[in-house]
Image (cartoon, rainbow, N blue to C red; front, side, top):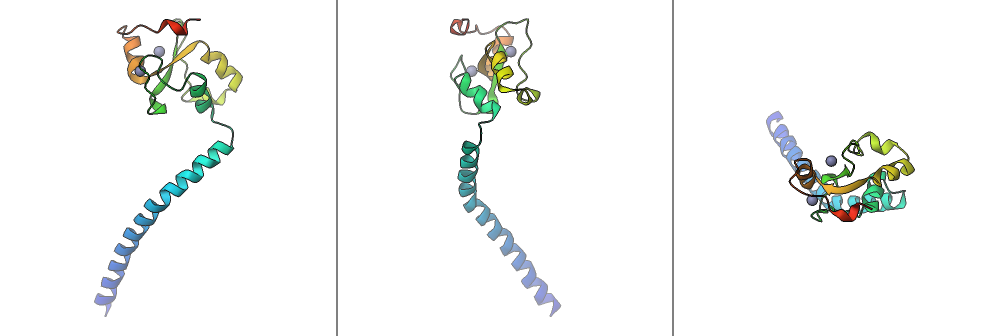
Length: 127
Ligand SMILES: [Zn+2]
Ligand SMILES: [Zn+2]
């Protein structure tokens, strides 16, 4: 009796896991849509604003697939690269914008190439 009951329980647990997984998968899209709407309703995040402000893509190669692979590079080499990923976003947008005016938006790959001296910055950004 115990044996059969635990077998039923086990299969019930298995079923629950599969079922839960499928439910999660199915509602993921709805949830994502909901989250996108919620975010759009609220004020844009500073990073999103910053990316928009700088054109939303790599100024060198045009990469725009993954926003977390996009970085801000200070045009003036004497200035430190803008640490917008972490503490940068706790600053006010005005301060961020002031910094952004001294930066270009480039992807991580191009950023490494720039620092390695393998690629020239586009002159368009030097206003
Ligand atoms: Zn840099
Ligand atoms: Zn790039």
